[in-house]
Structure formats: C-alpha cells, structure tokens
Length: 83
View 1 (spheres, rainbow, N blue to C red):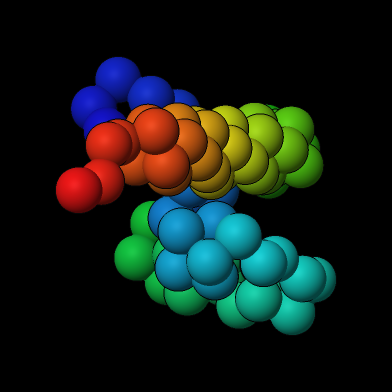
View 2: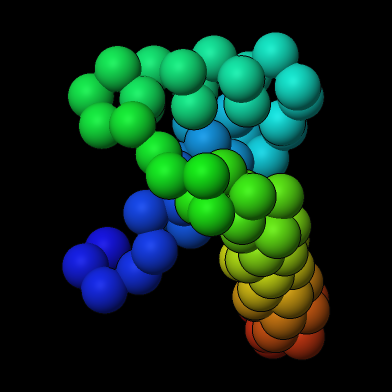
C-alpha cells in the first residue's frame, strides 16, 4: 500500500487480521509489535483513531458489496427457468 500513511496501513492490517473485530487489547498489542520494528511518531499515534474508523468503514463497504452481489446472484438464480 505504497503512498498511504503508515497508520492507515496498520489499521487496515489490524481490521483484516481481526476479521473486523478490534478491541483495546488487540490494538495495543498490534501497535506495540509494530513499534518494535519502527517507532511511530506522536502525530501518527494521534491519527490512529480516525484511521481505524476509516479502515472499519472500508471493511463494512467490502462486506456490504459482497452481500449485495450475493443477493443479486441468488435473485438471478431464482428467476432461472427450470426444466
């Protein structure tokens, strides 16, 4: 995800690894583990809540998109002539 802020990439990874479930413990552990490799700046830490919200909204969008596609496919299948 070149070109994206580091904290957004961390938030996306956290949401995807947690299957959309995030709690204070998992967030803290994930950030601590990341910071053993490269410490985050204070501004990046302050940006984490909004980036996490964006990542969760993006995850909801993907789930909703798959649900709509599945319902559309099911609806089309129901109208398929049998015989």
